[in-house]
Length: 374
Image (cartoon, rainbow, N blue to C red):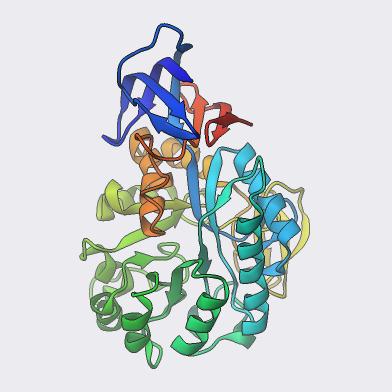
């Protein structure tokens, strides 16, 4: 099957006019020779399926529930919204609860559900966090870094954890990072670290920063902190929640200038209330109240978002981020951070044919999973 007359977002990180083919669920002949029987897309825009590497849930389901049916519900919602791969995030919870959640991810992957986004990893968000910056994490379950516990969880789910989060100021963090980096990406998160502690973490092997600005010290000219330590090292990429609630539009623009489009990762940090009406929900054993699309704990702390990644990408563009940069930050870059770039993240020969056909403003027209239209 070949498609022609399309503006294709390529690995040059721009739109190029041409054609592409689908063979056995994968891209081929991207920008190659055009066949006479190719389907004419009439100048539509084609982008890679988006990849959300930090999402807790949607449609009333949360990854930490540990229910395979919930993961399936989440995955089908993602696919319908142009998010074709995801790495669900856990919460700060007891190890036995995390073990159950991770097992549900493994079971979902093994079940090969049709019409659903592919689960390509897990982001282990907690419990190795600072009490001072726990945010919406449950303080009752916070722990110091424990590599043996992490390695047991990782082995139990068949090495699905692709990002593990840590506050680098905690005792034993450097040793944890040095060992964990051999198993997955290590990210700084929910931290009160000063510059020196953060820089030590980066030197030890941190290559990711979880939800930039949120649950970490702000930049100060005499106390540069985590953000400066991450920004000045070209190996560290940064997530950002561009829902317009967690981070001011000007700060989104600043982040892209500070890290560059090649190091930014758009995420949703969506909760089970995503895709649901206002009301009362649950997150990591705590009550969450959503009103006018904004989710907060009982004490007023902003929790995750109620917005999916596709909408976050569109909002980033509305904030002034170049369309091409926002797409990269929602597809190619997240794929790289979870080690999935050889399979997904861009429209290139040999990669899984997950893509979205849309108009010039990126309004979705159709979503394809492995070359099949939803």
